[in-house]
Amino acid sequence: MIEPFWLPGCQGALYALHYPPATGTPRAAVLCVSPFAEEMNKARRMQALQARQLAAAGFGVLIADPYGTGDSAGEFEAARWDDWRADLLTQVCWLHDRGYGTVLPWGVRLGALLAMELAVELAAPRLLLWQPVSDGSQYLRQFLRLRLAAERLKGSSETLDGLQTLLAAGQSVEVAGYMLHPQLAAALAQARLQRPMAGMRVDWFELASDPARSLAPLSTRLVADWRQHGVAVEAQRVHGDPFWTTQDISCAPALLAATVAALSGGA
Image 1 (cartoon, rainbow, N blue to C red):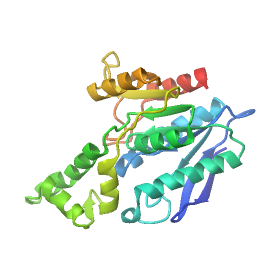
Image 2 (cartoon, helix red, strand yellow):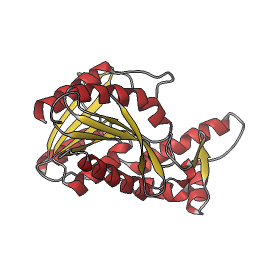
Image 3 (cartoon, rainbow, N blue to C red):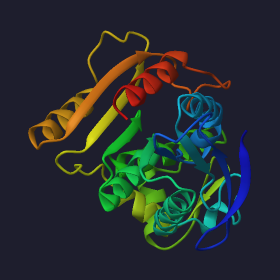
């Protein structure tokens, strides 16, 4: 049975969902780190479906809306990267208090950057990544382009450089209904997917219409570098649509099955 509850965060209450393991002693706890802005809303169904399947396989799962998003306290403009990271540590403590000896971070899209930071800080034995964003500055530019596209329809001549200048001057910028604070933008611009510690197991999943194709070039380079430094990376592409960007809420069953198979086989 799903357990909804409010978890005290460093700036305000976080709305959280705990999926306890179906039977017996939990194999481990999986802590979900959700995507950014509208991608989080598009990913909710996939995260919930995956959490149910992992719980049925004997894992506990915790999913909390980051501060300033979803049903958690605060407005998006008040969200800060460091607060999100601190709240993840609070979630880890909650899981430990519930008897979970091992916590495995699970990063979805931009959440992969925070999940990696958490995994390194915890010296976690394992990390799960779904279509990870590796470069926060590139992601920020793509996010800002959403505003440019909308404004051009109104005849605006705004530019990417102009938006970045506003942020650098300390002014918040609204993008697709989300008020982006300059401090959060600055943290995104500096975020990179850091190399895990040697010995960590990383399960890296990407979606594609043709799973036989290799990983994206940047992903391929990162995976090769990590392996050379002693990280056990299992990277695979599975069939499915990019659910975090589709117009309608979509599902990628192959990704759900592959994730359960990976964790169940080596938990």
